Image 1 (tube, rainbow, N blue to C red):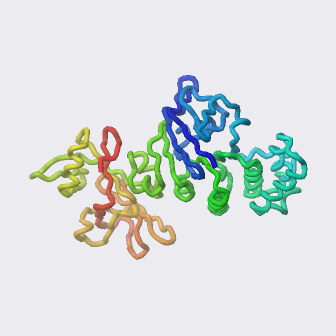
Image 2 (cartoon, one colour):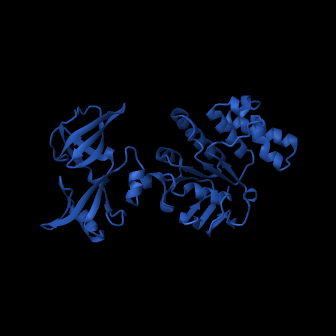
Image 3 (cartoon, rainbow, N blue to C red):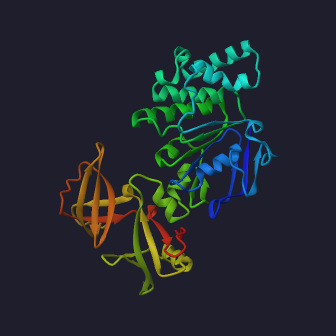
Length: 364
């Protein structure tokens, strides 16, 4: 097992700063996911760790050794690419064996290690086939086998499941997670799929515009996002962000959304009013934390119009129009909501988030 440390990593492509001061501390045996939208810098960060890109500044450590000046072959890392990068003229056996042959490993040792890995990945029956004779999932296993057979210090994976269909992707992410835990190999995994990140990671590094916004366990990032971007990026449907104005009335701290006002409890109100840098704040509520009722209640007192109803099998996703804002709610199938119907909405105080409109950082 090997730890990986990235310290103040910066990578530019001409005038574009692809990675801007990223620091990560990845413990031995951890499964860390770099998560973010296209162009956020996650793949460039991975390629810098692999040695495929040279950073403009910052240090990369593997096993507490600076590897900035080492070529990829000397870093003892194995990379699995999005397109698998298998040699089309070689059999699965030869593709897996290739890195060992390049290192001039004895033939009987190659035979033993390839068969060992093939058994682990359940592809023993595919070893004589060429890539064109394999399905996407089988090709992905062969690519994994080629990485595993070297017994590297670190696995680096760049969206390895993105070319698979939805059902196979869900199956393979479970297999990958099981395999990583079984082998206990430090793994850095890139994806833009937040569900994949939540399901697989020990820790998630959320990136945007080249910067690291939050680095923590999935549950912490989901329930206590550090910024508006993090809150909105994780979750499906995403977190509702309701623009409000912060004001005081008779000693109470009020959030005014135009279509409704929301009085904060005194303790939360004091935190928000003392930390907000302007009067503009955003009320963040996850769709599953909204309380929706066909009748006005103490817990659901904000009027809303049913705008769209999306049955999702086990529940409903309802778009609700409140003034000129549309928010989403996840409700049980038992809620009989019809288009145009008036319903009532409330928020669970224990699960709301309040973000500064200027800095976009979490206040509460």
